[in-house]
Image (cartoon, rainbow, N blue to C red; front, top):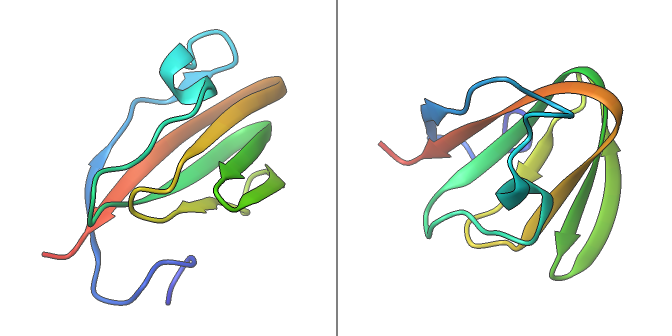
Length: 93
C-alpha cells in the first residue's frame, strides 16, 4: 500500500483545487465513491475534518496527511477555517 491505497491502482481523475468558499455542498454532506473507486483527499493548505460515516471515524487532514476513501464508503468533509484541497480518484487499470 502506498498512501494508504492498495497496490496496483492508478490515478485516473482529479478535482479542481477547492477552498473553504468553493468546496461543493455535495462534498460537505454524506456521499460515496463508485464501486471499485478509491479516493485520496489531499489538503494543500489549512485543515479539513474528514468523517467516515460507516463505521464512524473522524480525523483531521492537513498537508502531508491525506484521507483515504474506500470504494462505496459514505463520508463527508468540513473545512476548519481557510483551506485548499483536492480529491484524486484511483482504480484498477
